[in-house]
Image 1 (spheres, rainbow, N blue to C red):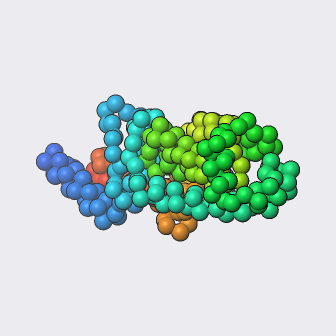
Image 2 (tube, rainbow, N blue to C red; image 1 turned 120 degrees about the vertical axis):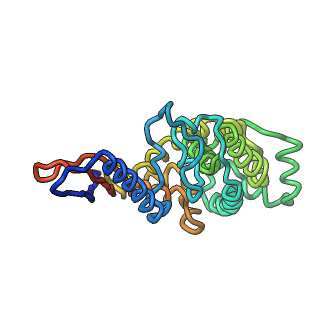
Image 3 (tube, rainbow, N blue to C red; image 1 turned 135 degrees about the vertical axis):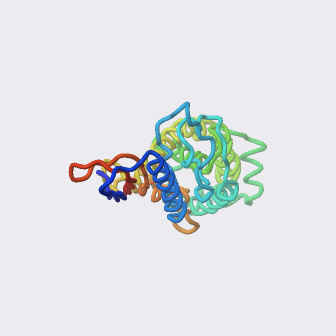
Length: 296
């Protein structure tokens, strides 16, 4: 997307050239004017792009504005695997949403054809629910399952990536997000809800969180690019929003109800104000003034 540029030029002209003292005073005034305009514009104009080039001269280790307390407000050099700025409230909200989704998923699996899973419903119904869990988890333990490969090697890794992003997008480190994903997929699902229906699966215990974390970190880089470009991909907001929901489904869906700081930051990044005090050529004459450039 090519940015539109609106330039406001404040120029002082006269019959007599400005003295050095007048020039310095005017430049001081220009800077003060720019600061006043920036403060009046609010945090939306002060926010900087998280995808700005790395710099040694100006290392930024915190967001420009507390209004955008999201990991996407930090520059690239501060988002290494061990960097952390957790938003715990959103992390716990996502954990609750995923737990509720598990119950709904279990209902969906109950309605799938028999060959979609290895569940023997007739045999399961003869055993009380609590005893089923004890048999599957304590007495028999995990097994190598024979589920459809699409479930084991496509949907489960993608689910692991979605669990990973539920934490990574809310400021947890790579390792913290991996731990979150492992807890959700292994404890809550494999040894939790699904254990009422079948024994835990060795494939799911390892493939879902581990492969999901690798895919999820790639999703995190894609999400950073989308936030830095106002949720546009190849210049298209439609494609950008579709990809955003695919790579970070939990946060994007929850954000529809509870607000999404990444989207607020993306909108702020699309509007910037810059100034450049100094000589300005106008109608063949040189004067001193202030260029204010608004990019949106």
